[in-house]
Each structure stands twice: as structure tokens, then as C-alpha cells.
Length: 125
Image 1 (spheres, rainbow, N blue to C red):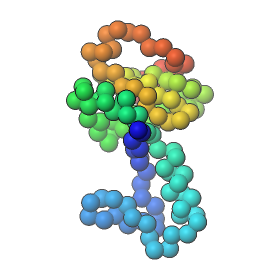
Image 2 (tube, rainbow, N blue to C red; image 1 turned 60 degrees about the vertical axis):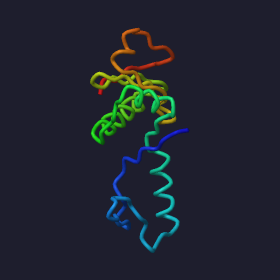
Image 3 (cartoon, rainbow, N blue to C red; image 1 turned 30 degrees about the vertical axis):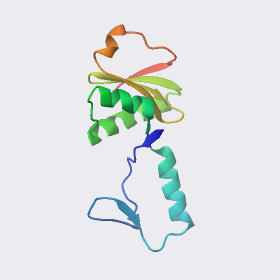
């Protein structure tokens, strides 16, 4: 299972309901549908394995953390990385840059092993 993180701002033709969820305007044409689909595909996803690791470590990512992580993935992508280790505060994330999926999350206690394999880059966020 992959959880999707939508890091985008609602489009001009969208409104935000009381719960903060974006809803499409009544003029939903092809262009609006294409824009929504593109945003969905470009959003960073967290694998179920990574989410379980975060939950077991009782780590809750804030919106700021997610933005930092997404920016780090973008920087890795710009440099041509495929699999990247992203270091952020006391956490480490192994990310498939091409697929924009967080494969695993490692907290400080688990990081003591000190070995990360199958990565081609390291980004400090």
C-alpha cells in the first residue's frame, strides 16, 4: 500500500470546504482533470513499510517535514539520482527518486548500524 502526500495548492477553479479539502469547481473540463492527474502523479508517496517504520518509532511528519523531504527528492532528481538516502534531522529516508516513493524510514536508534545499500546519492535536507 502506498500513501500519497499531496503537496500542491488547490487550483484557481477549486474551493476549499470547512475540512480543508479541495473540491473541484463546476466547470471541470479536460484541462482541470489533466492538471489534477498530473499533480497526483507528481506527489511524494510513502510506502506501507516506511509508514510502519515511522509509526513504530512514533514519528509524525509535519507539513514542513514533508515539504523538506519533497524538496530533497527534487534536488536528487535534478542531479540524476535513482535511489537516494535523504538525511533530515535525526531521520534517514531511502527514496526511489524516479518513482517519488519513500521506501523506508530509519530513526536514530536504527541508524546506528550505519550501512545503507543500493543508493547512488545522499541528500541532506
